[in-house]
Amino acid sequence: MSTSDSFETCHAEVYNLLSRESCVKAMLQFESALAQAEAKVGLIPDSAASAISDVCKQAQFDLDSLEQRASRAGTLVIPFAKDLTALVQEASPEAAGFVHMGATSQDVLDSALNLQLKKVLKILSQGLIRIETALSNLARDHTETLMLGRTLLQAGPPISFGIKTANWAASIRRGRTRIKSAAEDALLLQFGGAVGTLSSLKKDGQQVASELAATLGLNLTRAPWHTQRDRLTHLMGALAILVGSLGKVARDISLMMQNEIAELSEPGGEGRGGSSAMRHKQNPVGSMAVLSAANRIPGLHASLLSGMVQEHERGLGGWQAEWLTIPEILRETSKATFAMVEVTEGLQVHPQKMQANLEVTNEVVYSEHLAAALRTCMGREEANSLVAQLVEGAVASNLKLSDVAAGNATVSNHLKEAELKAIFDPANAMGDSRGMMDRLLDE
Image (cartoon, rainbow, N blue to C red):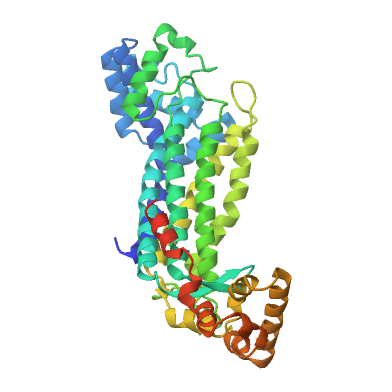
């Protein structure tokens, strides 16, 4: 898939997986698997399970009607189960009484959600791997590309663009790993019946649960989790952290795209990043999409944290708030992920501008290194005071700090010409950048 196709195609696929149609399809998958599990355990006839499964494979619902009735019933499952039972009744009257047997509404909705989540997370993971690969390649290509380090938005000593992008790549890799771990913990079957005890299935409840989990490909938990939302909230938190990491990358890229900086450019193309009024502009629209998601998701996740405080064996309000919140978190994560795929795979780097931005500082960004060298020859305060005077002189005279320092008698008394030259050599300012970069990329 080409970079230009990533956002539209992959993001649309995630949207489709979170649609009403996909939700109902996952609910039908649950009901079919439930009937099969109960038949396997011997609770219902094989013929009834087959009839229910056949109907589930081809059932068509009036989604607008379901949604309207759900708003009055309090859950989508009530009108859904009623309509499904009616369809089974038409196909096999003797099987109709076995539809939805032993389950409660939350069993269907939570399990269906996790079936959708499993597919969505697979797509997101593929996008994140593409981002990691693009950033890792940029890091290796720009190991020796010098640029200004910036702290509190002000110029600092030089770094390599390689170490910057390696840090970006590592944060995305950690995010992907965090999501994978949280998903293994959270993508569980929900099956507990009315109050989470499977009492209507008596001694066969756990065996049905085991068969149901295996059929659906969801993990089996030790007990239902109707009002224990910690694992699901943790997974959504992992997604929120990931989008925060993507937002960090987007923030840096957008700042480095400002006209007066001009060290990076997002990919262009027909209809991308222009302005309706200012024709000269190339706006960072990919970074903008990521940053908008990074602004929204903390509030969405906060809603889930609030909703964890649930009542007894079925939540009143907190659980229901998830129905809108979780899909929004997933959509925003998808938007951020595939916008960043597009940005990183087409990012244009301008090393000459990075070098020019270094040179325009007249070497005052090396003041820390000069002070450190002088501290070995004089007191700390004396060295700091002298360097402050030298920096002030360089700025006032628009001269390089190395030239001002070379003309200062005190500096000349303490530092040889070769030592002074080494202080202002960019290669000596890199510290352990190469080692750090290698370690980050090998994580």
